[in-house]
Length: 411
Image (spheres, rainbow, N blue to C red):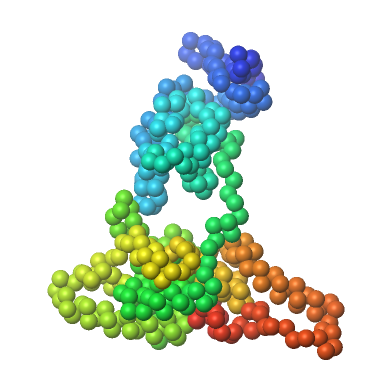
């Protein structure tokens, strides 16, 4: 028998009415608070479709906060990475619970989510009158969407209201892309000479490895003779506690070719580390880490980033983040003519398309060189035309590029 329902305006909002079969016969159910008739109709259509298919949601007074903290997070802990779980937990406690925790799960509306996102963009921090970034608010949306999707699957709600919500759109990748020129990178590496972390920064710059990948690198994963290293372990911070783990994705587990300068720096670093071990003696907790504290324990990722920030200020260089060494590596490599596929493999990106989308449009000289090349193909080179300064597209081995890019690494 076809399920029936209707919609009625109540004051400034709309309410959906429908009936559910129970032990004592049909009982009327309602859900109000919809801003428009179409929102109420969409909810009612989904509800009636679920009832027709035999999927009935039992009325419940459980709140968003109770669902997230007592049901969803404990279950998610079994399949989320520790670092991801910790990030979810902190964002739920800090941002979601204060605003939405007391709302009934089955009463959560699209309007409430949209208002929540808008409020967080305007004043997301408790300690300062400023909003969260669109990226962070979008992350809050991701958490809610994932949790509500599981609530639908378990029959706690009839639809995922986050599907219809409008989280902030993210700007193009280049909006947050800050990179150094080859000269600025060279000045930084020269200025770090003698620093205990100098080789770690050099490796990040010459390979594009992530912070956790650099700090998790083991000597057993480095072959100085073959000039390659393998990314098989990372260091992450969970509730400020250092943990060792595997890369997130299969693409993240990769092999990276090394240039001769980086190989030489790693060899010297290994000699210095062996001397450190001999001084510390039996107290050294050897975990085979290429970059470790004086006692052998892993270096905290935050300390690594803070050391970088202090060095940049000391050297008077343009302010960039440690992660921007990875962006610098990719941008300089592409500008020097290295194939996007090679750069994508070095960076551990999921696809070549992602690499091109993130970086290619941020390097205007690449488009300029492409225009010149197409012009020559179409119109030819006029006789007696003045010479043109070579670009990274013309000669891959021009001076000033990141060392190690003079030969493309094998796949």
